[in-house]
Length: 164
Image (tube, rainbow, N blue to C red; front, side, top):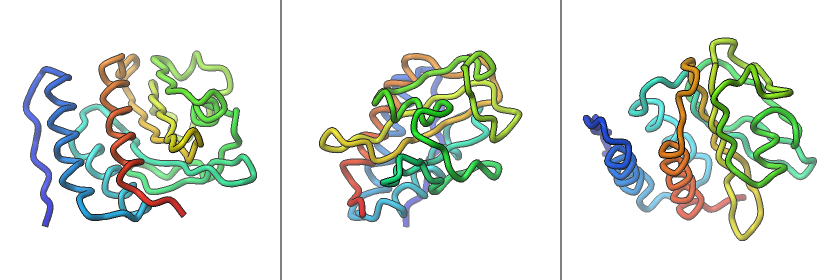
């Protein structure tokens, strides 16, 4: 059975390297995208400090993101492509790092406590499958090192998972 290990380091590069290593072990021999999303959400929420939400939205054929596995308070179930931070990440096919969600035009506030957000699109063979969404109650919580770290985690998740 897999058990998470606390990562005690102030160095973000080392932190994400160790988190990536744990994710590799966690996803070893599992291909189901829902099971992998659930476990990755739990791993992130357990080990990454200063988060109030970590989870997934998956893109459906009607240009709508639908809530997937997550950790945190109840969330918005459906988000149109192009709307909010998650929908914008899909529309632009790029990671959205938002230091202050109140300054983001059209931000969708599922949890009023959220102050900053990082959304990484899940892309396979040039096609967006969904997003990994991270919220924090701390303004400016995410920086370029966090972005690179979560983009690496998302890439591992996509490569390890078979999508229906």
